[in-house]
Amino acid sequence: MIDQPTPETLAEGLYADIRQYIEHATERLEAGELVALGDLNTQVEELCARMTDLRSDAVQHFLPRLEELRIALDSLQAHMLEAREKVADEIAATTQRQKASRAYRTPEDKK
Image (cartoon, rainbow, N blue to C red; front, side, top):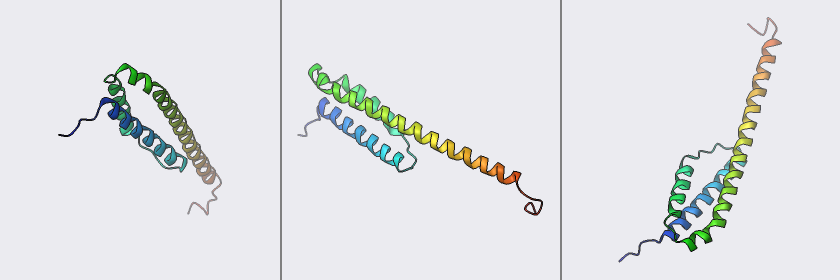
């Protein structure tokens, strides 16, 4: 007979998966890569749902880890906003260079 995982084990696994996802996403952002967060929302929602299955003492044990997770998510959000601003600045600079290049073209350049 195969033992079914306990609610605590399921919550621990989800927590570990989410932490790893956040760490990987942060590393990719810092490397200048694009990051898709499609599965993250689903995982967080599932972890929240799993919390309702835990005994109260297990929930109390898990609360500090949930706070750590919130802090990690806030940090990821800050990294994403910073990356978005950097890309927006690069696009604006490129657009300005293109405008300047067109403005200073001579009639010979246009041929």
